[in-house]
Amino acid sequence: MERVPKRWAALDGVLATGAGLGVGHLVALLAPGSSPVVAVATRAIDVTPGPVKDWAVATFGTNDKAVLVVGAIVVTLGLGALVGLVARRSTGSALVGGAALVAVALTAAGADRARPLLWWAPGVAALLVGGWALVTLIGASRIAAAPPVLEDPSRRRWLRLALAAGGAGVVGGMLGQGLRPAAEHPPVSLPVRSMTPFPAGLETQVPGVNPFVTPSSGFYRIDTVLEPPSIDVKTWRLSVEGMVDRPFSIGWDELLGLDAVERAVTLECVSNEVGGNLIGSARWLGVRTADLLKRAGVREGADMVLSSSADGFSVSTPLGALLDGRDALVVYEMNGEALPAKHGFPVRLLTPGLYGFVGATKWLVKMEVTTFAAKAAYWTILGWSDHGPIKPGSQIDVPRPGHVAAGSVTVGGTAWAHGVGVGKVQVRVDGGPWSDATLGPDAGVEYWRQWLWPWEATRGDHQLQSRVVDATGRPQEEREVPSFPDGASGLHTVRVQVS
Ligand SMILES: Nc1nc2c(c(=O)[nH]1)N[C@H]1C(S)=C(S)[C@@H](COP(=O)(O)O)O[C@H]1N2
Ligand SMILES: [Mo]
Image (cartoon, rainbow, N blue to C red; front, side):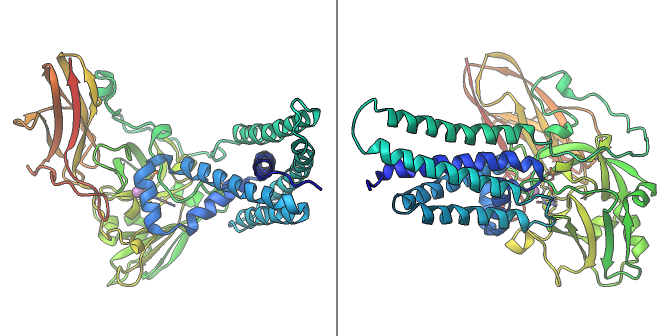
């Protein structure tokens, strides 16, 4: 029998694999967390070496997950091409190869904490559809590729099959994605409380300035899972244990019954570059960690709390930061509503003044009182700093780099100096003298201040820079350092061409 040319066979393999992937993703609507692509990408994060993860966050920021998924699809299609090549010699061996791909995906999906009902269904669907597509496509190629007759009906048959397989892949994938329930938790009832009244921000005067309060939907998201774990408040518990006299655990209803406070806090990721977007500000409501730790009775000698999340991530927080008056919180409301799934539903830790990786465990389930000498956490194991205070900083939100019309231009942005508060913000043009900006509303020392500075822009290329001076008179660090291991510093610089 004629051998199918290599190019055709590889293409058949890619098309068949695409059909299997797409249909599998669609069938995964039956069982949350079972999508082969999502499961493989999720596992991939778990087995990726730390430095590669650092690099991915630094390079792709909040797009890291999209890049990962696209990468997983491309690699799978590449393996599909290999399966196609095998099919030239033996369809049986190729099907075994395809089954091996499916087995990997099934293992990834099933290795997750809880296997959803029907967790195997997408894999089986992918194998049936992909296998059928491969056999028919290879069969059609064998006939179509043999005689080099143009406009041969067998070529049209192959084309129809190819379009059907490719279409099944694309449409299945898109439908599966489109119909997917948004990663949201079922509604929960929270005690009604009035939110702290908040002033209007400067964004109402100058469009483009970071809003005073970051809407939860636009708040940056950084974590090591592709999909937030889905947690049922009926079974969720937080345990407080370790070097304590009275370990205990607390459920959702009891937590809601405890005294709660709301704090305005700016949260930043240690990977945020100067001028980057891994920073946001919100009002957070929850129970003071100090109240929970006092109830447990912290023993002499402890200096750290290792907190863990439902997905196995961990954070080490200096004990002092959880007990002092800054009001670190076990949070269950963000901007007046239940925490969104992406931001830690039902409960997260929030330690004002510390970067997220040392103080903001999402999907919180455990707080273990211990010591830095005894334990380390997810990122600190990889060499990131044990103590992660947020460095004072400022950024220019408007104008954006690029062209600006000569004349009056409002320069505006945000600045923060946790724990101390912003004293002033200053702006300079082309390295000239610093001038004071006008500050926006004040929501406390753990929250950013917006600022504005009127500039008479003259023709030519100019460089704008801003700096924050904290309330004690200390200007921010001007030295440029990268984010590893304890946060970036340097002046945010925006270059504009004025004409
Ligand atoms: N469970 C869990 N919590 C986590 C993380 C994570 O990967 N998993 N990332 C931390 C980091 S590095 C940051 S910067 C903040 C980000 O919180 P956000 O996604 O709500 O903005 O969450 C922290 N809490
Ligand atoms: Mo982070």
